[in-house]
Length: 64
Image 1: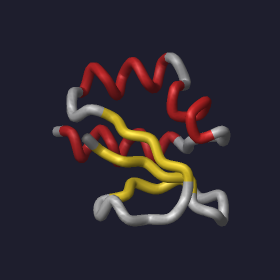
Image 2: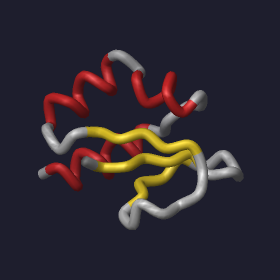
Image 3: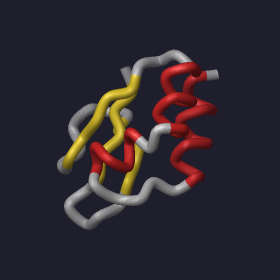
């Protein structure tokens, strides 16, 4: 699982340590899960904020 966090400052980051403060969501390590989350705006809904395209690219790179 990969954790993505919206920090208290409102920044959306990938949490490599699993210890960052903020609202977090987990994404499975399959590319199909990332693609589905992107298409259905699941991260945006769960984190209650916009998720930049660069975060999706970082997640894609982490999965490959």
